Image 1 (cartoon, rainbow, N blue to C red):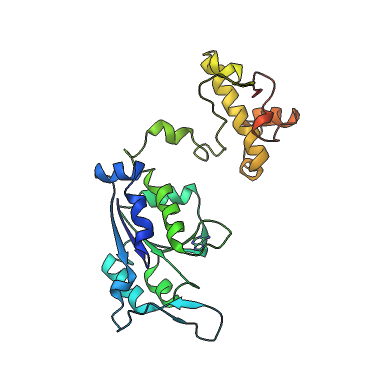
Image 2 (cartoon, rainbow, N blue to C red):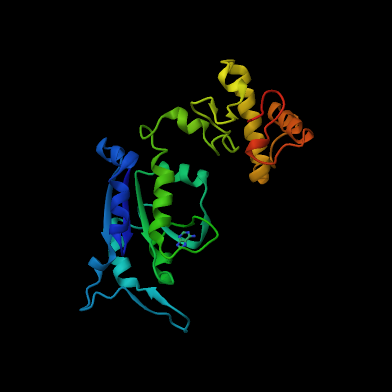
Length: 256
Ligand code: ADE
């Protein structure tokens, strides 16, 4: 996948592409990236990229000309062009999967009060918000989107890691433990250390249901209560589950 990020502060993003899993994905040739400085497309004497809002109002807006030139040079709108903004569609794993199928992605980062609407109308294909809060800039939001997307590209991380994690099953991920099995007086649930894989699988599914019920009950709305998962959910509810990750109970599900 080729990723282009259009920003007034590309230096904020550079470090992200130069470390850890992303660095390896770039070295392996799975990802290539280009950071475009919008100011390089502002041709007036002061290379001005913002201006006051027509009709009045606080703050400044990003001007259309530099954005238009930068986006056109990047290949927008023929290539998928995501503008990260708090007034976009709420980002989720399904959208991340959709974006992961693209050969090219352009991410546009806003600053100040946002960007001129004409750029949204002519160059942007997707408006994406990463949550119901306002950040001071789009760079961090763009990195959030990129991070959720690139790790889904085959070869970036292991297939097993993806299929086990939160949201891939529609549930939150079960609690996990590593050595030592006893730390101070905190003991790893017995079922996880005794090697019975069927019991471990059932414990994990039940623990996922308990956690999802506690933190994100709306994710359970569409579960068919007559299915096996539905029956397990009913069991969790009947047992009074859903109070957080440390309430896993009975059938060996006690976490301490
Ligand atoms: N820019 C500022 N806040 C944002 C948000 N919540 N999501 C996406 N982009 C943003």
